Image (cartoon, rainbow, N blue to C red; front, side, top):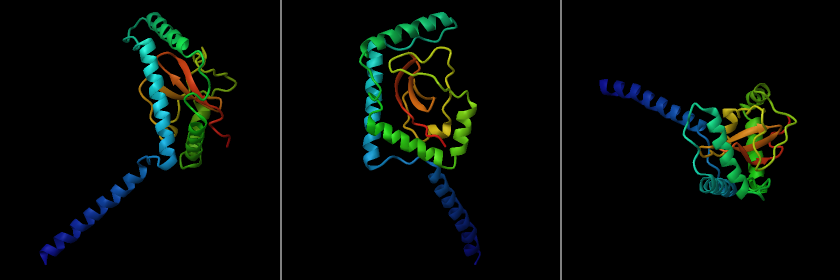
Length: 194
């Protein structure tokens, strides 16, 4: 009898642990499947190709230094090298039509989800950028703040390698190269109005 009494509380603990595991799994980002998996793979290949081109052309960014003029000079030198080899770069080189459509769906899903209002509020309050022109293979506009992308929105997007980041400018999603300060590509009208 005593053995059965010990088993009952243990079953409750195991059941509770399994229940917690299910809840934790729901919060884990789902992997894309089917056609979306191919689209994400294509995106990652294009990003990797850009990253390889940048490293081959401009090398690695300089080591951190307290001398800001030295860093700015090195960034400009890297930027000029990359711009020279990407003279024909255009919108859609990274974000092809199927990739841009995937990103718009992911962003729309995030905005329609539980965190949608929080994402929109974050975009409105963190120095929203409107009326700024972004151009491929050009530096991020001087004097314009780098608006942070809300973490709950980033969770819906493919992870980028170190040195690249997503930024929101106007209603566009921009792929920004941190080391060269260049706009690599962007998805026009990625953030739909509420």
